[in-house]
Image (tube, rainbow over all chains, first blue to last red; front, side):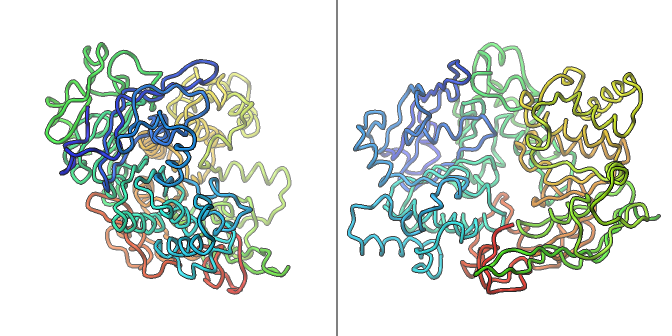
Length: 339
Length: 297
């Protein structure tokens, strides 16, 4: 199932990234537990795909499985293809090169993913150590300047503790784009930042992506942010994608009760209301029964929702994994507007 | 009506190590004054380094202000250190709920003993009376007797925060300080806790000082709000007015940075304006000695 093929105008060509029926099992507390199930995604060259979900939804594991950066011993089924090459088939040399040159990865907490003992310059040029020194330096300075960092030469000699969180996250972006990758994996890149800094960092990312025709997988818990900075959006719950659709119209056209619940639960500075709150707590894939993964929290649950798991179906330009999507459409949107 | 909490000209200066073994003054909070009426709710909003958490800690009595007065129920607070009696008295006046209940609840204690500990101190009543009060507190916070013997580790994030709120309420405080109390929660859980805070306040007549970086959340909890930036209040008033027609440039900047449908991220004029406390010569955080490199607070 090419869930997102139709969200892209050029969705018919060969995709840059394709996930087919991905399933990941991890050993947790001595037992095998499914954390990602039946995930299929497609991302075209230069496009941005948001994956939004709460804790335990499997969004980060999905992203990590693209880079084969899962915990040791993880069991993976299904396929991850990058430019028509199966990532699972890559031998160690090829895999290292794939991670270093074709992927750029940006994590949530820059301080946790940078070695405090190395200068910014050392960190930036880590992936291109085989280049001549002068070229390494030029590339590093260019990358820093591209992310809007003034005085790049001085920054190269500084250590991470000398930079603020926002500045350090720019350095992480510079490091990610420096080797000229084709795909950025951004896992909650702005969650640790203030909103004004988040806005800046996202603007830098947007500019760089456009200049370099860079595709991006953007992992976040913030549906509003994801909708604003991506082309298409996948909403994950309990290890599954429950809905995909174009980001720009996600607020008006969302159909899955979980997506609507998330939109209604988010407090807005522009209006005050008693918030719609989804009862219960988010569950992990291994806690889901045979039916719909959202059944235990859904206000619209029926017997069939408990008995059989809905497959994602195409409705308009969305794919929705809900038995009742069509019949609930008006009720849900009424509820969202009056939340 | 007399204010329950009065903060007058509050100022907190930290000495921080600077370059070459010298030290510099870091003004974390300056010239801050506000009042909180009984049953009212005031929010302090700001980004990292704005001084909002320092303010919370000063009001909670965890630190002494450099200058300024904090009055609770008309009585000026004595400077630290406090004796046993003073500590117990303050605990019945001000309680604080933190961002991460995982670090604020004792991991080895059951929820029951964690609440009982507080009740013994403040009620000292019979075991039966305390036990009845525990049931009442749990149910007020959306938990029940099944949670009594659980430890924080075996609770979900939302349940842990409910338990932390129940523990704070056990001391029957006059003012409840909520320091980013919903910031670490999943969106669907955050809505549950925000609704809980609203219903608790309505049912029990609680008084909140709500500390947050999130303007969207603030409107749900507080009718009045103070926007802080670099240690000073840049704007204060009714939350509705501030959010619908902000007067301060900084408030406007904050509001514009919140993602919403149709929003696009924006670059600021100069890149290095992201430079936070760690940046020299930037004057952030009311740094008085601008030439000194300061650590992030």
